[in-house]
Amino acid sequence: MKFTILLTAALASALLLAGCGARAAGNPAAGAPKPAEVEQEGNADLVKVAHPEQFAIATAGTHDSAPALNVTGTVTADVSRNVPVISLASGRILEVHARLGDTVAQGQLLLRVQSADTSSAFSDYRQAVADETLARAQLARSKLLYDKGAIAQKDLEVAQDVDEKAKITVETTTERLRVLGADKEHPSPIVDIVAPASGVITDQQVTAASGTQGLASPNAFTISDLSHVWIMCDVYENDLAFVHLGEYAEIRLNAFPDTVLKGRISNIGPTLDPNLRTAKVRLEVQNPGFMRLGMFVKATFQGQKREVHAMVPATAVLHLHDRDWVYVPTDNGQFQRVAVSGGDMLPGNMQEIRNGIQPGQRVVQSALVLQNTEEQ
Image (cartoon, rainbow, N blue to C red; front, side):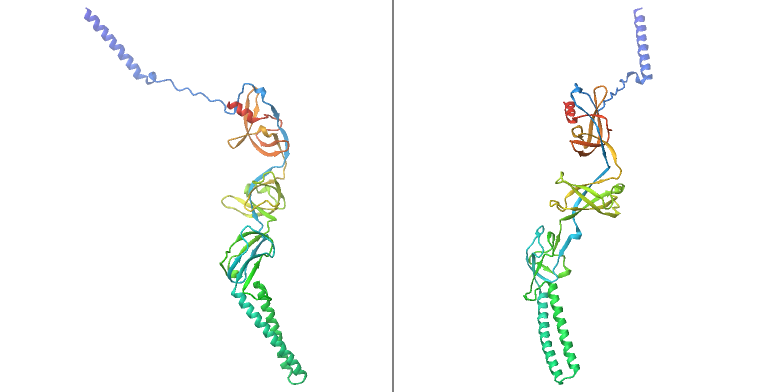
């Protein structure tokens, strides 16, 4: 009897376990973990502080201005004011009296050249002078004989022709000496090359003991008048409507950001760079003395149509991650960080805001203080 009862209980337990296993196999998700719950992160641009009333609030004002285009440019020499220094006499350079970057005056000695061309020219000149002296004496003798009836008129005319040709030869050889840079009164194979104009030496292609082949050689020096310079800017195709011939642009040098110069637009390139889609715009600027070739500048072109933008205290603009931000108070005592596009600095420590907020909106007067408070 006991055995029967125990057997019955064992069978019931086995059937119960089998049923549970069947249900588990029929529902795979019965033993699976709960699905992950994703918690949404708060708005990173929304700032909440303990005492919002301690932050001063400013109201954005109105700034009426024309749209501006800012581009970069490079200071270059005005090529119309570049003067080459050349030696028409071929030979060996004995002395160099100037170097690259020197400021020279007109007539200043730059280099000396020992030239066989000059020696040959002096020889021709002296021979021409001797021939002229002989021709002049023969003409005087022929006139005397003609007056006495000793020679015919044709003989006198021949003497006159020889004398005239001798004079022309002397003039030609004298001019050749002048072109070579020699002085007929001081015969010498050495030619002094002087500065044809005043300015700064911006290129040098000669050294002492080197040679020159006259016009076949590169220019010995290039003298540039830097009292007026060019600024070459790259303007994108879509921005060409901002530039017009004859108008002026504001120039600010990276080395002297507080100095504002005026440059006149003298040329707009007729062709575009096929890769960058930019045109070269040339500005002519009077050099106050501190502009140097190769300097980088920022040129600002003013548009024709005026626009109304907001302006806020400069301290209200936060420069973070290469962007400009301002903090705008909300109704619940929090502050919303808003991205803006900062413009030019204005008098009274104000800054123009080209987009992001409108005139009349309220902003935190000191954005950096609020940012530091939030981080703490």
